[in-house]
Image (cartoon, rainbow, N blue to C red; front, side, top):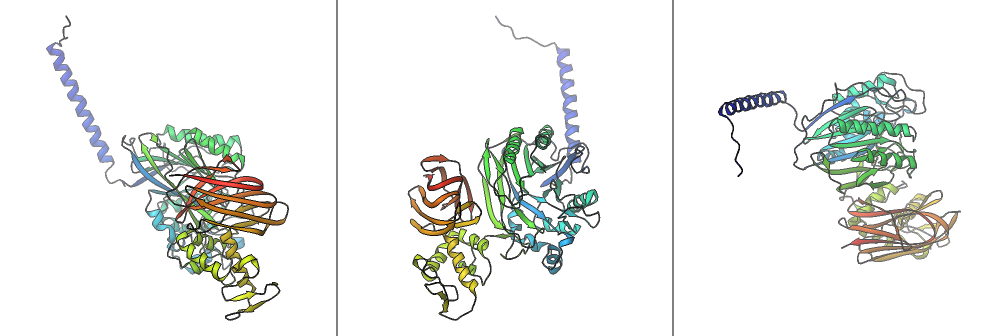
Length: 566
């Protein structure tokens, strides 16, 4: 028979005494922690840990001692959701060798130092998230010596208010312009950002930010070239962040080739290596144009967001850019893999023929006919307006009725100027303005709707913007620059139940990228086929619709089909 063991009375007394002492010690420890944390900001707290930078990387001053964690103990096992927003290249200032009346500095003076002018259109978006991160490309300093290079960017330290005024909380300095004015300029930039509450990071300076009790690590990496050494530095930082107890690890990388829309093999290799090493998200910049994105191992790789508040060019050729936003769900050390993301299309300027250094996001209150400019290039602005498909249907109906006459026999401009069928001269209908550009603008409007973009040598992009309510539309014998020169293009776009189909024929072999849409925001794209074969695709939101990109195509005939669930 089993007998329950007994404990002698003296031993019981000893155990009780030990337990009482331990409870008293725990109480004193908790009281000490509570006193130490009194008065701390409970919203967002940050610190940065520093190890010596490699000799070929700018040395970064320490932001704190020993890499203390920002949030103290690990978050509880309760799920926490937090939204992080990312924008691209931010050059607050200009190159002194290119200073003129249209420069960033001149705009600052014209606005009489009103820091809110530049990012006013995104301040509400940034203010509604939990953390906003940008790439700070250039020095904020009054000192230092200009680097011997073609472009070296510098702005006043007070320009840091531009970021803080729009709720930007963090900025990477890992790029090819952060040391344009040497170590002095680099140190001054960090100080200027710190003064405005903007946490800087980059190279071996890992920022640890406490967001809603979640310890977030921000890692900035610079790839002057694709190399195993650069990749190892990045993955070592990821490992260091994990060792410091980071629950969410985000990597912002400066990489790729400037003004190239296609990623390099090295970008993809390095980006995937970051995910394999433990990064939860990789975001990129440097090309100054928007590049693609992919989902790898359930994590997002966004290769380039393009420019943001960019003082490096008074009139960038490509003003299109992206804001990327992801909402994470963190439970202890686990970050859920999800598609709770948003790609927000925008322009670096509110005007098309110059840089106003003021970010433009789409606004459904625009008058759709406002796009009719007077001799101004309007492609970017018009694209933003047309992507708001609720407005676009009315506009396109008017344009087809009043401007585009069948078989390309003649065109009417917004002022009522009509070209003769021979194309040799035009005549006034309701007044005569004498501007060839009026006819050109009308032509561009039609080309924009048809979505024929042959401006890149050796590549044709089809990005039609027909209203969502149209079930079938198309063009035939349309002149376009194809693979070997000018040729003819035809396509038909059809909408059916749960599917969207584009059939295109070219008169010669052509490299092709296709954007399909618009689809409902809630649409779940289950797959894409090209000529009956499954193809990879990218799905994103622009305006009030969802769109799908398919690229890497080459040939003369294409049958592209997008399938949707439900």
